[in-house]
Amino acid sequence: MTNSNERKSELRLIAISLVLMLGFIVGGWFGASALTARTMRSLAAAQDTATPQAAADVMAQHASVQHDTTQAAAPSGQAIPVRQGGPAADVSLVPDVSFTLRTEVGHAGLSYVGVGGTIDGQVNPTLQVAEGAVVQITLINGDGALHDIVFPEFGATTGQFSGKDSSNTTVFRANQAGEFAYFCSVPGHRQAGMEGKLIVGSAAAGPEATGADIVADPANLPPSVGARGPQDVRLDLETVELKGQLADGTTYNYWTFNSQVPGPMLRVRVGDTVEVHLSNKADSKMIHSVDFHAVTGPGGGATVTQVPPGEERSFTFKALSPGLYVYHCATPMVAAHISNGMYGLILVEPEGGLPPVDREFYVMQGELYTQQAYGQHGDLGFNVDKLLAEQAEYVTFNGAVGALTTQKPLHAKVGETVRIFFGVGGPNYTSSFHVIGEIFDRVYNQASLTAEPLTDVQTTVVPAGGATMVEFKLDVPGRYVLVDHALSRMERGLVGFLIVDGPDNPEVFSSPHEPSPNSGH
Image 1 (cartoon, rainbow, N blue to C red):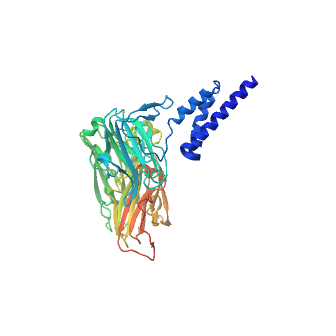
Image 2: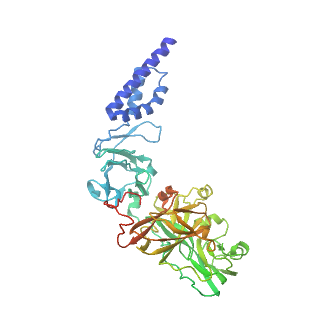
Image 3: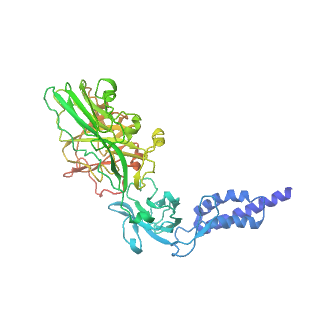
């Protein structure tokens, strides 16, 4: 028995040595360690057999899925060894279609660029294949940094690798029709521009999912009440359910106030008598309501504004306390109504109004809990389980990905003082609101307009259902980035731009270098 066990151990050591040698040949220390780690479990399982042939079979099985990262892609028609279904045996697939992409760093940021064929020279090209086709993707590292390309719906990836002009290949079967995103999974790279589209099957001939523009313009605010006295004010809101544009190629069935997210910013004066009228559009499928945090009364008005489709309700309240307040739908399930877009802000100005500034902006943060993963194209649905687990797929400013970057960024000029009315619809996340490259001169903490503001603040915390007002003077031109400093949320769509034009101010900031498009800012 002892001799038998010793013999097995000897065979195992021989096998490990052979694996290490093969690893060095394939990829140096990295290849040796990766191959050995993955093979150990299989060698242990083969130990009872304890024959040189068993060890050789294990090594052959695992070596078949290794590839040299500097090797060019196999030509179309040649069998490519791939692993399907996790632990299933390796099989060889002959590619029906092959694409080659190269990573690139340019003035527009990071990207993939097509190499050869119909996609040659295209930035983040759209790849079109037939349903069921075997697809080969070769990625060439054009800049030397760490990159990969992933197709998550098909479980395909080249794996992350670095080294200028090195390459990796992945092969998969496009076994489901539709539009799918491909992207770089290195943190921040997708946000910086490394993302494209794969169209499989009949979707190639279909139109891209489009919907209404639901993004509230951050510069569209009612004027200040100024020095006027108290008066009677009427506010009209309409609840509208509509298919809106969530992202490029992606739509969502929003529930809104006045067909926008957030709902319109409302502005009154302390002491005003406010008459609220809420109507629910006739084609709505849900009952809706409104709860004003500025209201002193049952449900903030929600108890008397549960409005069926095609009907209207109203109530009157006295604006007793100055401040910036959230309003939202409060029809059960309340969190679902809020998440779907039903929130906004009402400003109750103090006597004499707010001090004048050069520009005012209206920004709110919210979450969407979609059935489909972030980045998937098409019409997305709501998922209540993700809502209850507080696992948002999308986190946005003003309702959509790109709302305050590519669609409606904030604009101002050097020397101006800006004021941002900022609120969190939620329904779940607290925001750590921050403007990268600026310091808030004044923060009206928790949106209190009667307490003294905080001064010289970098980041301010705003809870779900809460708000703040910040003010700061712009000294230097450039692009300033609005974020929640829980920065992983940027990868879920939460980012905005404040673009400041004007002359340079070298006394405050100067550099001999051009701004990098890949800084994340």
